[in-house]
Image 1 (cartoon, one colour):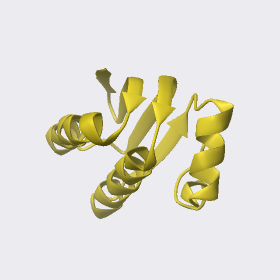
Image 2 (image 1 turned 135 degrees about the vertical axis):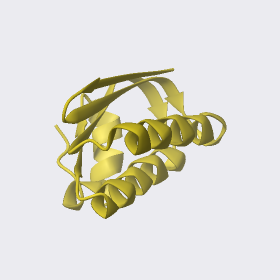
Image 3 (image 1 turned 90 degrees about the vertical axis):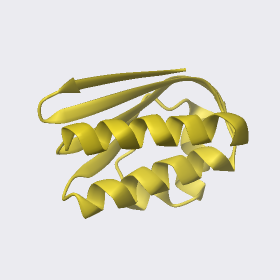
Image 4 (image 1 turned 120 degrees about the vertical axis):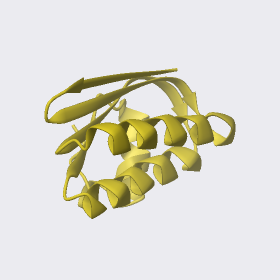
Length: 100
């Protein structure tokens, strides 16, 4: 469901499976704990293994963007499939963080 890798100064969160109301709370908690423990300059959220995402995924990215901004860091999204990337773009996330 989630793999966290810190290679100073960057933290990568590799998400897996479905991101919905049920999984998003767990993901938020785990990612936030890792960010607070490592204080990365950049948080990369890797969506390459995500098969489904509802609006909870948008909230997940937006919340991590706000957290990283408070810490003086940044967020980038990588590996998003076409449909997930389209949802993120329609929600305006591409204005907050690069989506690759």
